[in-house]
Image (cartoon, rainbow, N blue to C red; front, side, top):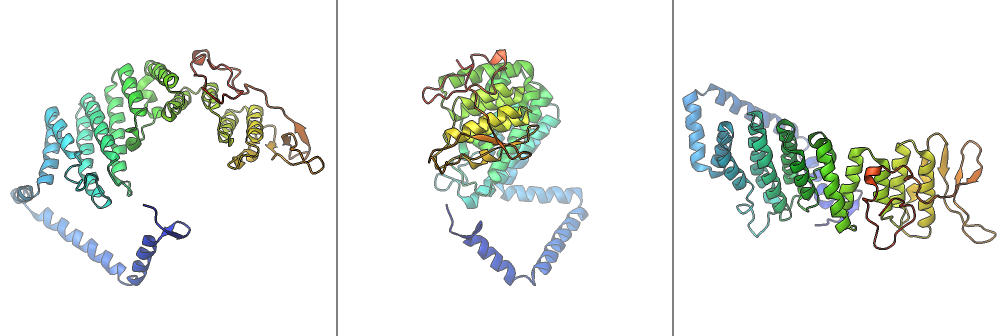
Length: 381
């Protein structure tokens, strides 16, 4: 839901909270002190109870709180490494139906669901710590899929459920590091997940799995990702996976090839390529891509103005904006201005800049765009 904004990023609800705080300014310190005192009194009382008294108290709470019973049953199963019970309890904890009064989980109920789902994270961590990392990794995959399927039906404006999903992803990665599962099988699961909309909840990144995958796993990822991109060259997820793979392998030329296959008319893709080249110490090529972006985005209402801010280390040049010649009324050639001399020098854009040394293993793996193919994609099949 979009809220009316009056100034900056403040909506009316933020203003209302601020006004309430101001009205209660004098009493806030007393309220905080009272809350601390209550917590301290409870802690002291619990510490004074005997073991039998504590057990009686817990049993009393379990009798009247079904959700608490389910959570403690899961912790008990995790302590015993009872995989069948853990799987059943995790599925129960991630079930949205008790919270979805109208077919989806509203904002007011999202935190309660998230707190319940967080118990699954605790159980999986316990399982990993107890030396059952392989089982924890397998159960984490199931949990990640379950929360991913449910996420689209949750108003997670607070981000609480998303935080639990991220914790599940972290548990899975940690379990994989401990168990060292088959690299090829892990790669297949990872690619399937990354190309699925279910990754919206967990936001898993291929780069985080490089250690787990190793060379064999990355090779399998490369094979599957390339096949997926060939089948669907316009797919955002497929392209992004290819970019992350190139990043994981440190292959700047492959990354440029992927991005150059679908250049944005605003010059934003040219900017990304220029930034990658600049970071790799290939300043002159970065400048050429920035100039090309300015030239091809010329006249576009959404042209990326950051292209003019590309400074190239070593050459100390900066891309200049295209200017209109007052005498002829035509656009002048893009130039590179040196802040040292103040003079402009012509710097033509070479097709294929940045991809002269493409790695042989990437040769022929990049699909040719169906339409709007731009120059500068040398090495594409």
